[in-house]
Image 1 (tube, rainbow, N blue to C red):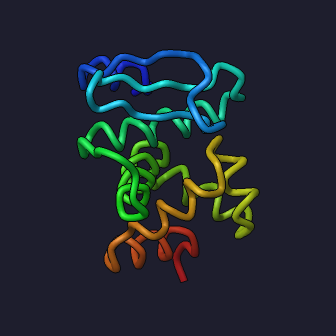
Image 2 (cartoon, rainbow, N blue to C red):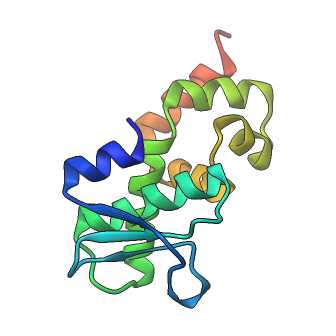
Length: 132
């Protein structure tokens, strides 16, 4: 599902204009809208939109390190599919190369990896390494 459809489902409006402070995007909980910088490239736009939707999902007000992590993990879980990660990781173990293959930012890959449970991590590692 694309971020615009998800935003519509969540009742969040997306605006394309320059956010404050030089940010790529921001969530306004009072107006229930996300502002995205119109000059972002595809990957930056997609990553930023999902991150801001994470703030909307959790109904964050302000931005603390904990909230930023929650939004990043939520976004990464929507941006990265386990099967796609496995396929990319079978080709390379380089973070930037994996991110490139998944059409996400390296920070999205890091957040996704951090979000894995021990059971998920073991399963993913087995999938990457294949049968013994």
